[in-house]
Length: 390
Ligand code: CAA
Image (cartoon, rainbow, N blue to C red):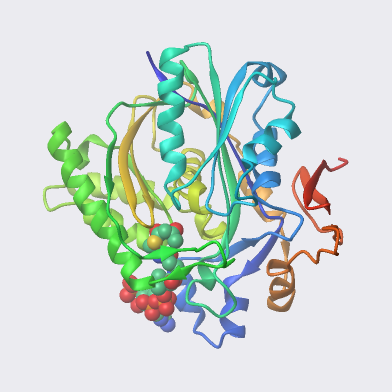
């Protein structure tokens, strides 16, 4: 049975911070961010936008009433949870009006878990071919003011509808995963920003890629020339670019190398303008590739490298389906251009604002720009979401 991505949607914060403005404020050469990290701007989410509102907005763009009647599982992958107990997918399930006899869970392993969610969805559909699974990857990447990771922050969500006979891409049964216990990036329950061994984390990312790729090649007798494109988890595009150069080897024909490099540039177009969205980052790179590449055709194989600090990595592949372009947004750039540019001072106030709860656990918020949904209030420690009026 062919199982895979039938629809893919995206949402990001409605504010944007220019890297040149951040560089100026931090007394850094702007080239360090725009060339050294390959980032032009990053999305900023206000307090009224969180993993639930982003995921609901990303889903809203792709789901029909029929999908909502047929979805029987909602999996939300995240590392910026809003609750230690209740799954964020339950709020999304309710906001979207998905039929009640569905399973809703949240999954965690840093930036990796959406990949595990896809595999779970695939296993579920292979047993229940009529099922439709909504896989959400939703995160707000927040490192702290003036930290090394600050320019690599971001906010966004990818929503994927997984079905049998998908309209965009088949998920091939060729996953190779690797787990290694390393402290490259982690966030204990008592902090809102992570501890990061930055340079060590980049080494872990690249070494996980190298060793997982070697195992993948061995198990599947695979070569880089089998792939029309390779998508990477993108904490910042420069690291993924180093990743691409790790898997292009001396036997790769020059024309194929050029093809992979062009595909890579298409795959980082959104990342350069959004920043890191952790779990959704790899899938935003896929979306960017599919929506910007003029070279891909049905039947092409796309390699996927997923990495979550801690660390778990995985390589698997997708096969493009005839007519896949009909399912994509032809003007995503307009949505990105529609964000409101904010100053560094506004960003510092908006991005780091914390809820001020009264004694009973109530908080109200100013009105900020969000997608289709917003966190309206907190009442007795309960988050109250609403759909925005159009
Ligand atoms: N002009 C052009 N380039 C410049 C420059 C200038 N004026 N100044 C510096 N650069 C280049 C550097 O040469 C370097 O490029 P190379 O690596 O190719 O040499 C690049 O800019 C970055 O500069 P630094 O090496 O000085 O590093 P930094 O201070 O910018 O920090 C970082 C980099 C440690 C990765 C930091 O961004 C960070 O902590 N990020 C968060 C952690 C992270 O993203 N880790 C990635 C792996 S973990 C993961 O993948 C999970 C996840 O999503 C978090």
